[in-house]
Image (cartoon, rainbow, N blue to C red; front, side, top):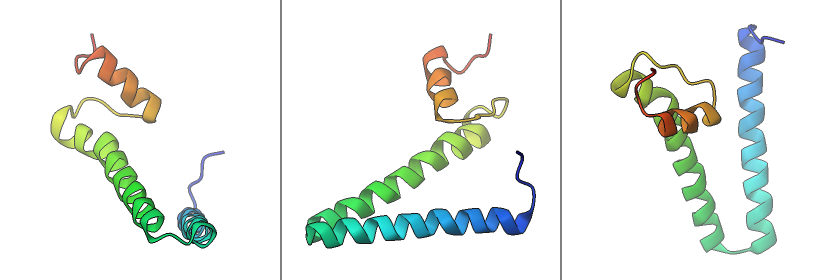
Length: 85
């Protein structure tokens, strides 16, 4: 199914955010450790930046001819090199 309704797309994004916040809260409550909370923050931040790098920076600034469909495609792109032939 191809999701095209903007309200449903926003709802999906909101649900991802809710899952993120609840999961982080549960982990911090279980461990009661500020170091774990800090590491969770770093994991979340670096994951978001890595995703942005793979799917925006490469396409817009490095190789505008290539479109990535997922993390696996990005890894295959790295192994093949930037040329498509």
